[in-house]
Amino acid sequence: MLHALKPKQVAEALNVSLTTVHTLISTGELDSFKVGRSRRVSDDALFAYVDAKTNAETPHAAERLVDQAVAQGHPRHVTDPSVIDRTATMVRRGGDAE
Image 1 (cartoon, rainbow, N blue to C red):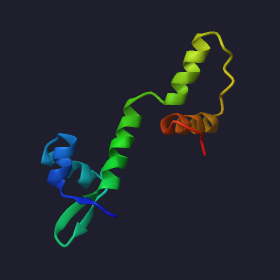
Image 2 (cartoon, rainbow, N blue to C red; image 1 turned 60 degrees about the vertical axis):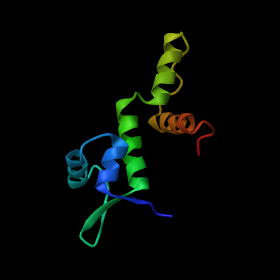
Image 3 (cartoon, rainbow, N blue to C red; image 1 turned 120 degrees about the horizontal axis):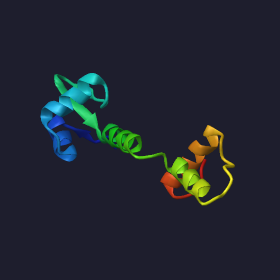
Image 4 (cartoon, rainbow, N blue to C red; image 1 turned 90 degrees about the vertical axis):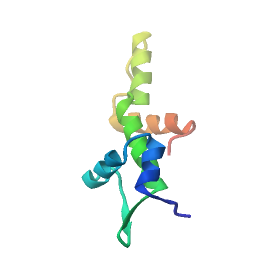
């Protein structure tokens, strides 16, 4: 089921100003849609925004693990970016990579 949030609700959820939410929407950083003359943000769009920001601001999980292994003297076996991305997906999900 789609949950549509008003910009004011998004501002409260993110603990930012309403102006900041409107800026995120107008720049396309936060996906939204119109219902009549009103603007709404789906909960999926809000989660995607938060996830993108969280991943952008923290080091890539797989890269951190490889760096730790190399620092402990292990050879750097994983150099293929696709392997690193699959490993990061696995680490984020807490299980097997797809």
